[in-house]
Length: 232
Image (tube, rainbow, N blue to C red):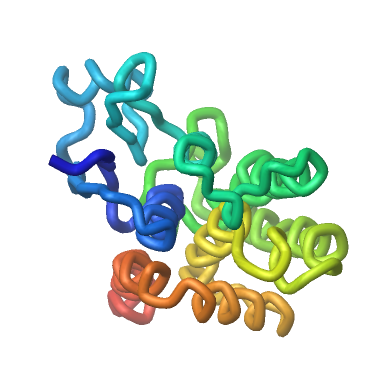
């Protein structure tokens, strides 16, 4: 039996982060695709938030852990993976700051810009989940897409001026989380600035098949739902 069990949804970039990480870190793991199987009493017994990715591991207080950044941080701490999550307080603070900025600022814009095309449910209370007309929803998507530019530029200026990656000379868990998040923007043909395209290529090149193999699931799903793929 594998030391780590990951319940995952293959089209998800939140799941993609941990899927890339466990491969790049060379950890012993088993993946369980729970597409269509969430929400059951068995799953909710392990994960009352009904979220993926879900790590099951004997060393955890409740036997399981959700949230991609928390999972990656925990596994780095447990296995002493300095190259992915530095122990120096200042360098670690940069990695943490980048991850929190992704999940707190950038990714919410990405979800609002891409989830309608991806056919993912919108969050309650947002325009996309409301009963407003299609024009209003389209304007909300356009506004969210436009808003991506500012946090992208903040990343470049603050996190990527001191080295090739947020983590320095090699990708950290923050680079993995950032790069994976950007994969969804292909759904709306987002016009990445040249530096962002170069950065994504550099992360994938540095991590090799550990990135490319799980990313192919997200890319395949994105290609299948884009308007030109479905004849819209």
